[in-house]
Image (cartoon, rainbow, N blue to C red; front, side, top):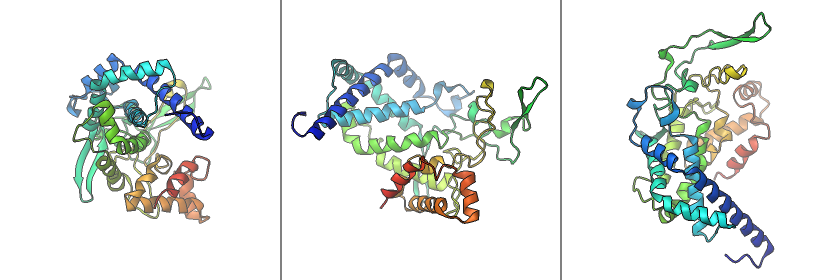
Length: 333
C-alpha cells in the first residue's frame, strides 16, 4: 500500500509494516528443522504412549502461539502489508518455503483437539490425557479439603515443606490436559483462525477439510459450559482443568526455588475465565453471556455473601486486571 496521503493512515501502515517485519523474522527463527521434527514425532502419538511426565509429546501453548501468529501473518500479507526491512522480506520468503511443516503444526492442533458429542452439540478438549503424569497436574484428581503440603520453620530457621497428603496414583486424573489458565490462548487463536481461514489456505496452503475454526470455537465453548462451569448461575465457578477435572494444580510449584506455594485448590483458577477473554464466546453461547453478566454483577454488589464469594474466587475482579473482562463484556450483544 502507498504510505503517502493521510498522516494517520501513513503512521498506521508504518506500524503494520514494522509489526509484520518483526513477526516474520521471529517466526522464521522459531520454525527450525528441529522444531518441525518435533511436530512430526508428536503427530502419531496417542495417550497410550505417555508413560511419564516428560513434556516432549505435549501440544504446548508455544505451538498454539505459533499458529496464531501464522494466521495473523497470512491476513496481513493478503491485505497488502509487507515487511518494512530486508530481513523481514527474507524471513517471510523463507517461511513461504516451509509450508509443508507449517501445515503439520495445524494438523497437530486438530489431532489434539478431542471432540465428543453432547446434548448441546460437540464438545472440545485439548491434549486430553497427555498431561496426566505431568508434575503440575499430579494432584488433578485430588479434591480433598486438606492441603497436600505446608511449610514450617526448622531448627536452622529455614522454611521446610511438610507433606500432609502424600501423593499416590489415585490422585492422577486420566483425562488431564491443559489447565483453564493456559487455555486462554485458545480465545485469540480461534478468533484469528475463524477470521482468516481463507488466508491460511491461500498463504500457507492449509486446506484440510477438518479444519473448521468456527465449529471448533463452538465446541470449546460447549465444553466450558457443560464440563468446566459448576452449573450455578448465581455463584459461577470453573474447574481447574479443561477436562473438567477439579483437583489441585501446581502443588508445591517451584518449591526448589524456595517458593512456598501450596497450589491452586479446586476452582482456584476461576478468575482465568472472566479475565482470559472467554466472555467473547458469550456472543454465540447464551449461557456464557448470562454467566459473565452475573459475575460482573457479583463484583459490583455490597451484599456480604457475594462480597465473600468474590473475595475468595475472583480477587482481581475489581482491580485493573478487570479491564479485559469489562472490554469483552461490552462487546456482547
